[in-house]
Image (cartoon, rainbow, N blue to C red; front, side):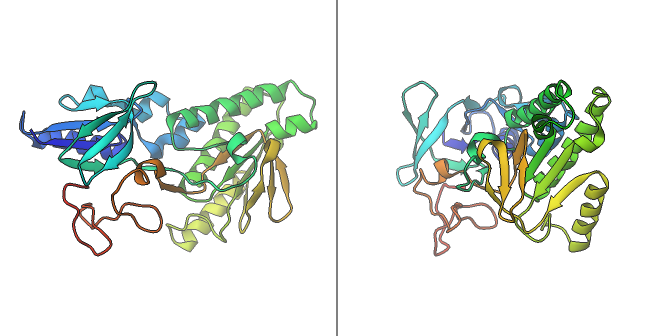
Length: 305
């Protein structure tokens, strides 16, 4: 049987395998999905998970439960040698082994795009996984619990009740709104904490938010956020976040107990750079409109998607 290897069990990888199961006759091909996680995550639901409006289990789909005729391997693909149609599979805690394939579908997805900013890696939470969304929710609740036991006006109380979201795209805006809503709900359980004590800031390097939508729409969102008590700082960049104190290039400082990083994504570098498939300057595998991989001259790379 021809072997179809799907690298990544996220939305694209899961649906590729699911559709192949529907269209392939039994025994027509072997389909293998390799992903370190046993489930697919609906990434657009992560802001709602962070706020508690959606339970984590409702934002994930078990691969094995729904892929009945696909072999699921919980491991990482650390090297793709497409010239020889061989992939290196690295299970956690185990020895690497080789898998020979006939067709490969690379759906490893994206990871948070980070910059060399001091303190971000240690103090910020991304929003690319269900675990990060749950961590954001837990941190928000825990900060309210800690702040309620501190004197009003104390520096630590102010820090615990301050939330910073970096990045003004869809993910950042929705996360800011969801966390603001969650904080409003928490205020009903913590009568000792006032609305004015909770501070929500969004920092965006561009001169506008949500570049995917029209300017009037983004301006309408800005007004709505302002009415909800959220502060948006445009044309502002994070310069430092050491010890949880967010410093901007404009000179402001915001000590925060919860920093969310949503400043864009990039193609999974470990998978892309660990392969001999052609890629463009931004680090993405080059494809044409039907998702077939092509080289710099536009020639098809057979067996790669």
